[in-house]
Image 1 (tube, rainbow, N blue to C red):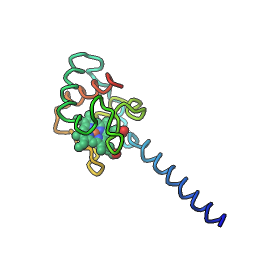
Image 2: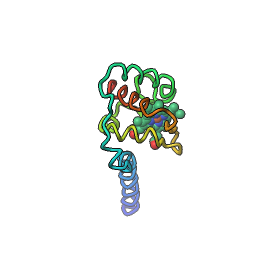
Image 3: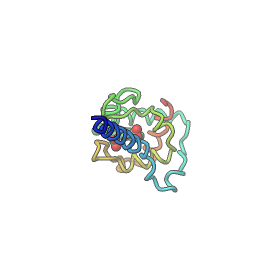
Image 4: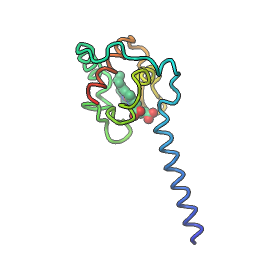
Length: 125
Ligand code: HEC
């Protein structure tokens, strides 16, 4: 009986470790030259406002008002994971998307619009 409990505990612990690794590895695959890219529009009010409009048109339906997410599968964009990512990490991820998990690719947007989105996200974090 005690052995069975230990096995169950080990499985639960292992699953937690794996889940933690999966969520923190979001930016691990970003190529270093993308990771290092800085947002050329950082802090510019016009870019933030443009990003707000693009957000409303393309992102709000899933990530909700002010990027807080739906508390379930659609993550908050104000989390430590996103605010701790580099500008380049986020721009790269917007290009890639993660369709298998419900995040579309935004590679069809002009690059400047992705930087406007990054500027907007920074303004609400
Ligand atoms: C159809 C729903 C949907 C739309 C529209 C959408 N997203 Fe997402 N997004 C998701 C989901 C679901 C995830 C989580 C994917 C995963 O777990 O890999 C995600 C993840 C993200 C992440 C990573 C968050 C993290 O915690 O690592 C960022 C950044 C992001 N989205 C930004 C955006 C932006 C900016 C837009 C608008 C251009 C957008 N998303 C539009 C569903 C959506």
